[in-house]
Amino acid sequence: MVASNLRDKYCIVGVGETEYSRGSGRTTRALGAEAIRNAMNDAGLKPQDIDGMLSYHGGDSTPSTAIQYDLGLRPNFYMDCSGGGSSTEALVGLAMGAIEAGMADTVAIFRSMNGYSQIRIGGTGVRAAAPISGPDLMKRPYGLISAVQNFAFTFTRHMMEYGVTSEDLAHIKVAHSNHASNNPKALMKQRVSVEDVLNSRWIIRPCAHLLDCCLETDNATCVIVTSAERARDLKQKPVYIMGVQGRGTKPGGDFHYQHGPITRVAGHYIAPRVFDLAGVTHDDVDVTGCYDAFTYTVLLQFEDYGWCEKGEGKDYVRSGTINLGGRRPNNTSGGHLCEGYTHGMNMVIENVRQLRGTVDDYCPLAAEGIHTHDYSEGHCRQVRDAEISMNMGWGTPAVGSSLIMRR
Amino acid sequence: MPTYEYRGQLISISDADSEYKGYFEAASAHRLVVKKCSDCGLLRGEPGPGCPWCTSLAWEWQEVSGKGIIYSYQIVAHTVIPSFRDWAPFPIVLVELDEQRGQPDPGDGLRITANLVDADMEPEREENVAIGKRVEVVFFDGEDGFSLPQFRLTGEVPENEVWTHQA
Image (cartoon, rainbow over all chains, first blue to last red):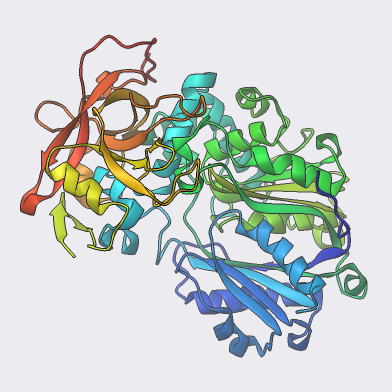
């Protein structure tokens, strides 16, 4: 197996985001600058302290070199990478590599998107208007364009093989909505019931009602990575990176469905490596962040990351384990289903705050780390004594990344 | 670079498109083709430039029977493509062709995306869509010589029990 000599040598020292909205009224450049500035202030870092930048985009963001002007940054290293979900975790690893290689000391990683008001991942507007060419020729002439459609063959086949129902999936949305009700930042704070999900209109049968789908959102997010040595002098309690792996893929990449089993996702290959790098087991993890583009992405990843046996994800998500107050709460901010869709970074930000003990819930003394642990609506979402977190990023059934952190 | 219009969408197939141009040329002649590796002889469902099993870049088009089963499906209740709204709800199927099923590895197959259509080339009714049902290729002839492979039910007795979410 893989061996690591970087475990605990790097930290996330700053996190920041903009408002999650549907209609930011601003450019992705303005959003990006605000998120990075918020993360710098969170860490207590000045412009001259940030000498590395990484971002990811799908032709819908702003270049690092624009924001360099806006915040007076002069990086020794930057890259704007093409990528969607599961890029956050992978770029944390690349930031560590850049620092280890001596190319930079402190790296800000950001994602900025007007994912509702400008370029929607769901495929409307700009994306749908472009002429169809290349691999899209095998899909879009048939009306297959959106993310959930690209994943649906995997979802439907999984329902057949393992007997998953819409009701099973609804429990994921219910859990995340309960968490979001204690998150002042969340776009959708309202708690929903299993019936609410089942009564919401169908998007794709049999695998996705409207409330099984995440919320297209305008936002920018940022995390800052530096060495553990530098982290000691900064404002926040450092959150240590124990292991990071990805983006890893299934056989076949984009055309993974030509191989079997199509119900297997990239996490199957990533899990053993990231646990080995981090030197921990499932039992050591207190809180998870499992990419919820759709309820089904959560269920599949829980299975293939080994939180339960293959086929038992439907029981795992109904067991109470993933709820606040349960053994291992998932997406305590509400995630993409309720807080807002960020291409994965908000779930890393949330886990950093969980490990610091300063989640920004409705507890009056939350910023000082004093929480009531009353998980009823409008109160606390801090996990008691959270020591270790795990993020599981999803790009497609074939693409994923994972990040294990500790306080 | 020929450009076609199909159901309100522009389709652009470049002369330099070494993956898909031959596929659609064959479709215009009502032939369903896949790529065959000229070295190891294996077929591949996605018409890419290299052989996933031996890395050979030498290939030729190979006509297939166009018969197979529904391997998975989705019923599009809400479409984001305006020109498909009059079709919704409509089925999209992942067809597994009869050729090379379970080869070279047990989970492998030649899998192609299409709509499941009826005799009038309209979307097949949802209650008739099920994993495991037998299908065959049909070709929708559009304008300017553009043809699109589609699939319809054959009514043949399926090999295994079929599955549908409507059970």
